[in-house]
Length: 278
Image (cartoon, rainbow, N blue to C red; front, side, top):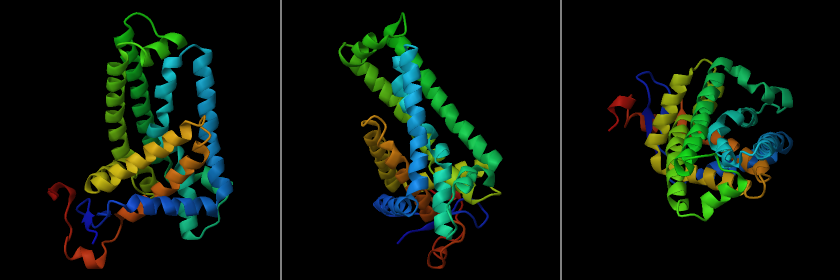
């Protein structure tokens, strides 16, 4: 049986502990949203794909191939902000409201300042990773930024390849883990609770991730797999996988975070605050 735990001393929000296999339920619900609103969902998938193509072309045009991989990682960092309109599609479908382009494009206006601040924070994580990638290349190259042929040589064929990849993946995973805990539920929370603020959303997201560590670890792995799968076909797969993950994230938020305790469970864990959780 799942448990409901209060995050703050006030009666809301509450966090439910869910089974480890719950991400598959979220994915199924996300797929149903795509089927229910295919045009709007897939259109949102096309926008970041087009932006990704443009960014890659510019990086190659200006002979900055070493930035292609860290730039691609931006989908993991700023994805929650990009998906704001997709969360709104799921919210409207859930509420039985019509889905139209204007309402989803203007979704950020439900809580504009706080959603914008959250987007800036996630962007800062991405910029930090980009700067870290540049420093990493400087550490292994020592003299100049690698051209395209030297970039491939450094990454795959030299004695430096293994430590370079290991250090790069380790640093990226560390930043991504922090960004995931912060951003897993923050923007759905801000979109849903129009009077909430970024700090409340972040605290709730981090607590929900910690209290559901195993299912959220699986969910993070699913996101990485689906995003990587979308990328290996020239980013085209992201047209489907990004909306799928975004819709599923909304359902994860609705499943894990509640604003009233469930009666059968509230008696066993009444008003337990975050700081008292072992």
